[in-house]
Figure 1 (cartoon, helix red, strand yellow):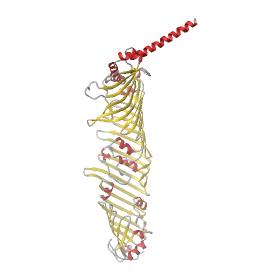
Figure 2: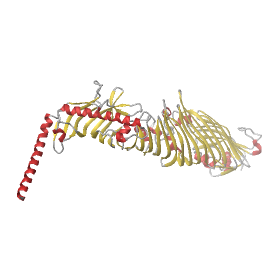
Figure 3: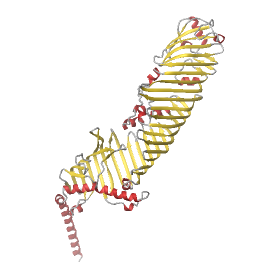
Figure 4: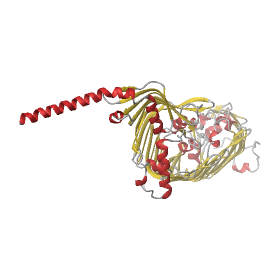
Length: 617
């Protein structure tokens, strides 16, 4: 009895193995006779919504999995017979269901596109997107979902969503092209990745890598309700973009309807803003931007407007907080908002919005103001501490504005050098060329520290000072601004000292005659009761209208010109006693006056006595 059961079991197993072997052997026969090329093309068309054409005969493989390998496959719009295919691939590998094949059906869950070419078009929002199919299961599912969303936009009934299967689409070594200027141009290359979407009412993920503008990029997307999203409803999404020049991520709710919106947390970081502008081809001179930038914020975007709330931003590791508002009008995007920093490098900040930075490390270069035609900007800034080159500032209140070819940066209030600083930098694009205006008002500052920061180290009055500088000139290059500027400079100094001058030694050398270097008599300091300087500037040449320093025993005056371009000096001056100052106009020698001529350059001035006067103290 027992042996009979064993024999029956062996026979059953043998029959099963034989059936399986026959099925495996018959699959290629079924594939070659019933799963013909047109049947596969029809099923792919019904699935995708495009007209699918397969040039080569399908090749069927049974092991290790049952699949069809198709060659020269194209997906085209049904209504555009003369247009190039939306997608064409050298090879498509389709994983088939063996049991469905035996029934004469085509059912597949995975399609692999090898070396596909995807043709995209630039949409009104600036993104490149492929053409949308006019039919197919995907389109019908979206239409059905659109009705579900319309019935209750706030909370659609997800149980009524279609459950049509979708599967997995993989792509390898593809490229994306677009028609630019009548010529097909490659937008993306080495495109590899996959989209996983088991059923229309399930979650979906997509990962892709490629090369865009010479940089490797990686994109990840996921949504638990992608069909609701495509139907115009709101659904959660996560999105990340990674590349060497920049990274971006978003996590929140999104809607792709006509009144679409985004609401969630976003992060952006770039190690070099200069590199990002250059890579993105934004049309803004990349040499005008330096340093790293990172932004993390709650983002709300809708109808051409993006609001950044509770924003944390770091520029060159200078952290700040605030709020920003982006709006996209008919002409230019508008950026406005407020940012508050604990510490801020003004040079790094300005370089992102103005042509402040030189074009190279070697020195000032051409000024590019094309950024003023790309964006409208209105930012309010504050910083507890800030730097502008070597200058240390505190309690800074500033604005940065760019509009209609005009770029302005104002420091309305700041503490520096023991006093108060106000300044303005203005670039105005005009038909005849860019005009630059620089204004500076330093009130009640340490005159010596201010002059040192300005690069003036000779005959600098030390004491409380008020300085005003106004310069206007063409903005072809930084050097040309100062070489061709018109304006004025005024400065008043309170009681203090005149450094870098040994007056007794100076007077002794003028009595002896012959020219001598100012450095020979610079080892001293002269106490003064005050000083005043007034100069008019024309085409980069400063004419001293008044330059006086008064001490208890003498008065020193200078007049003449100083050139910015050549750094040359052509000055006359004198040293007179205070009681003679009221009687002797500047430039006229009295009995107690020692007159001299100052020549040479700013760095190496020389003194040539005009006559011998007092042997003053």
